[in-house]
Image (cartoon, rainbow, N blue to C red):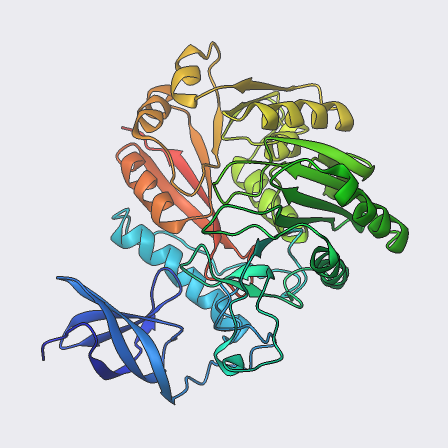
Length: 464
């Protein structure tokens, strides 16, 4: 049977594939199907055809998988925020375990590695401590709303339709953030609508209102509201800041990030504090972390402690080891390990993150951590100490090959690799496997109802 673009075909979904898609096969030919899960029977349309595979979208659900449930959110299936809400949570954990194991086998060519069952998040909803909502000068309506005359399509404040930069759904409530966040979202939308300033056009790059970023301290139940605009016009945003602080006692910080750049990134070229503090404070385990509007912090605060406890257990520190923390960000893992290490040295390219890391050390009374700002490829060769353990927590793209070579030259007895991307983790481990054995891997679910999965891998140097 020849598969062609545009073709409609009935498919049986055999398994979950990387990226959250379902995998079907027709005479051995792989077809990846969006919004489909194992044991679904679907009618689908082929939207992309390549030499070795095709991609398809569901037109009709002929026979649902027994693992499907009713999604709690109105926007499920349309919003890019959480694509797996319709999947039983226990099955989500199994699919994520499978992704990690298969990535190690097929990409890293590491067979028979011990991959533990995925550790579940303590909460399935309301877990996100940071949400970014985009402004758009045109609202993208749901299919069931097409033709409705009473829907205002002149603006949107919400989340993107998957795979697009200009289609924004106007979101009344996102179930991934705590409830108060949705009240703040509603108030900000109402204020923007009544203001005399235009919403930013994602195609025209004209307009004032660009993003709303909400940060929540899970431990102290405090909120930071970050309003991102294309220019500084404090008289126009100050009344909104005052209203939020007066209305919600839990809102302790209102910030205005300002950027004239065309890039759709909710980070300002500079910022001003409109009301309250310039930072909020959250806590993981015994440690407090001060967060500015653009600080990196683990998205699921409660599950972050589980992740860091796994890193600590794999590192096996006894108080005598020198630890390198590569891609250390704001120093959260470094600080978490400090009490069990002789010394922790963090490497991070972003200078503002290193500044946050040093401040957080002072805040927590940690004196055995130091941080080096710069490209790891340039800084690591100048290291004048012999590390005993390396913790690696790279971005989704994984490690640069030069960094891999430098790590191999250090010949440390033990490495702990922390990853938010099973594919690049497996690729990097494949580059290390000639000299290191993968002892065990622990997937940790930081992102319920999405296909994303965090993993911690323990590698030990082989005696050769």
